[in-house]
Structures are given as structure tokens and as C-alpha cells.
Image 1 (cartoon, helix red, strand yellow):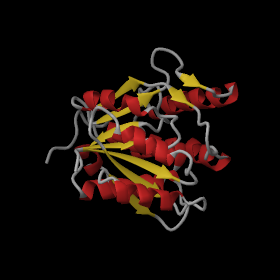
Image 2 (cartoon, one colour):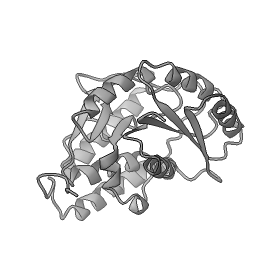
Image 3 (spheres, rainbow, N blue to C red):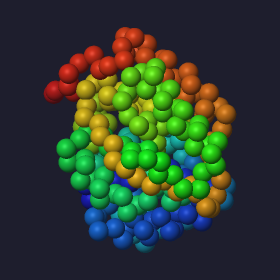
Image 4 (cartoon, helix red, strand yellow):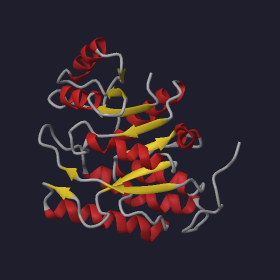
Length: 247
């Protein structure tokens, strides 16, 4: 078992999964891959099982049906913590997140508890998005900062690396959000506990295979979630403590 685990949720990703698995296994740093499949009707789960049978670094977690990105990641985090991984990643299966960035995440994680891959540090780093989608993403980031006070350029991004100690500090069973709001909530829970969070630049390339999972429901959930997080933080726009809890 390696110390780093890449969690990749899948739903109808049969075209992308073999390619992303091959790329991850060829990285200059050793990683394991956990595929969390939501009973994909296109047979992605079967392909994942076939890959796992060939490669000891690949593991598969089957879920009974499509229940949201957040729920898939929570299941993956619990699986990873039970097996004592130190660096635990969120990453999309569709190559919108470049696997070649994983070494720089790991380097940054040596001095941080959570590393966020940012599409907006040093300018816009997004390829193949229409202007409307780009404006939605940038506006969401500004909205999150305005309501919660979190000083991050890209709080809705889904390319992340958690240190084990950070995930252990979150009551994962209490996280109920999905989509954009899941990314915001996970970061906010660590930020308000005083964990060290850093952003590194990435280039985001929109998917070329499969379909986007974004919906109006996901956007609306994020709009209301930030107010709930603000209330949970005692109406503060800054962390209430100076550092993470110590055991």
C-alpha cells in the first residue's frame, strides 16, 4: 500500500476510467487509486473491477446508485481513513484535473493540512469553458468569500489533497452537502478549526468525454449552504481559534 490515495468518483465514465488509471499508475510518485462507482449503467463499475484484478494499486468501492458527489467522497474518505492513508486526494475522472499535478500537491502537503488546486491564481487557468460557466464559477468564489470570509480564490474547485489528520478532525457523517457546496463545506470546516490550507495553481480543462454533472439543484444548494456555514461559525468571517485542535 502506498501513502497516497487518489479517490475518483465515477458515473458513466467507461471511456475515461482506463485512461486515467493508466496515467495515475505511470506517475513518478507512487499512488493508489480508489474508484467509487455509483452503479453506472454504462458498465464503468465492471471495468473498474477488471482494472483492480490486474493492478494491486487499484481498488473499487461500489455504491447502490447515484447519490451525489459529496456522498461518494465521504464513502471514499471513510474507506481511506480505515486503511491509514496519509495523503488523500479528490480528483475527477474526466481529465479536467491533470494527474501530472499530483507531485506538486504532495510537495505542498508536506507543509499544509489541505491543498486546494486553484484555477484562478495568477490569472484564469481554464480551458474550453463558455464565458457563462466561467462567470458562474468566479462569481461563486467571490460570493463564498463575501459571506464566509474564507480567503481562497477557488473554494468550489474539486482537485484537493487532504492530510489524514485533517480528515480525522471532520465528523464526516455530519457532512450532508453535495456538488459545489460539498467542496465549500469541507474547506470551511477545516478553515474554521485553524488548519493550514494552501492553494496551488492548476490548469482546468473541461471534459471531452461523457457529460457534465452540474445542475440547477447543485447551484442552489451552494447558494444557501454558505449562510448555514456562516451561522455555524457564530456569525464570524474568520476562524474562532488560532490553530487546529491538538490530541
